[in-house]
Length: 111
Length: 117
Image (cartoon, rainbow over all chains, first blue to last red; front, side, top):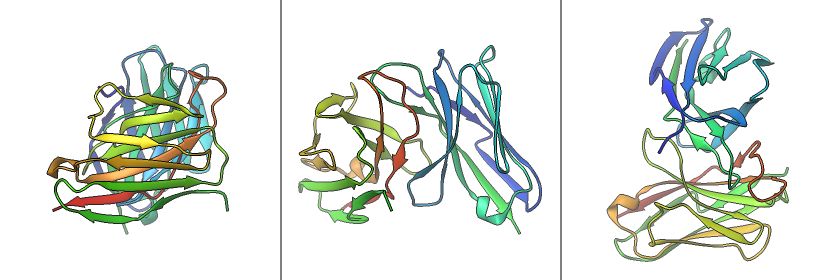
């Protein structure tokens, strides 16, 4: 069963706007990761946030983690058409080295 | 550049005809994973190898098998593909310290899109 659920399922914005995607999960975690997937391609790791961290930045990406609410958000600032992709959160909650992926948010950024 | 390579990128097979997908890595990672991803869905883990130790997910059909002859290569064998097995198959690797250790960044290959006729 999926650990992470993402919201919204789809997001359509104009270039230059900010995009926010949310992820909720069910059990306690060791870390939470965000991945991007361009259409028909493999996943690319964006950022990892550990359970003892609350916020992390990487370039135009900002990730927050609220372990009390079992939720995370990914903010992409000043979006570009090249940011058009699906974004997945994934959680590690112990055992067998594996991640559990959420259903993903499909982001479309229009020029 | 170090990377995860999957071959072929596109595979067409007939219903019931065995097919093998391959994955190789130059990252020297100890864990290799196979995921199945259907359209607009999340990747679903089929199994993974921690070094030579094979770990099958409970809901992975027996139709799916895997081999890891050495650190660099891992194969996915589908013994009798059905129409429902048409999907993108993703290979990934990571470096993990200790079986059951924290899973950090996974590095994905570009995927193999399987079509079953």
